[in-house]
Amino acid sequence: MTFPCFWKGAAEFVEKIKIETEFIRLDSFLKLSGMVDTGGQAKFLIQGGEVLVNRETCLMRGKKLRPGDTVSYAGKEFQVE
Image (cartoon, rainbow, N blue to C red; front, side, top):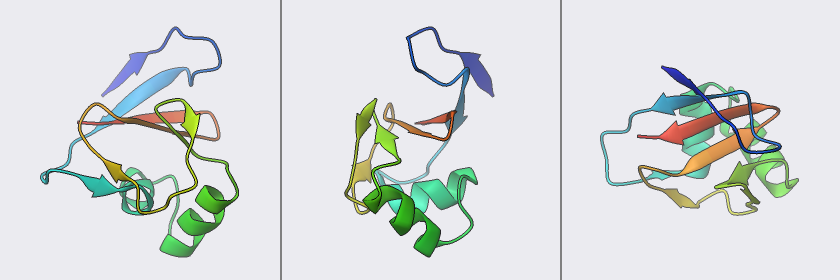
């Protein structure tokens, strides 16, 4: 499901991704959301400073994401649900 976003610089729509656990690692979330195909791609993008978590650059590929967190890359935004 997608929802419009209205803050400046945000992706046009936020897609919600439901997880069944307490948290998910950032690199795994990028794969789950379809933003990347492999863990290697996720590592490269995260360490290159191209991924935002809650609108801030995140360089930790093991960052624990919990429901309510948002992840942005290349004009796409996903929210952990």
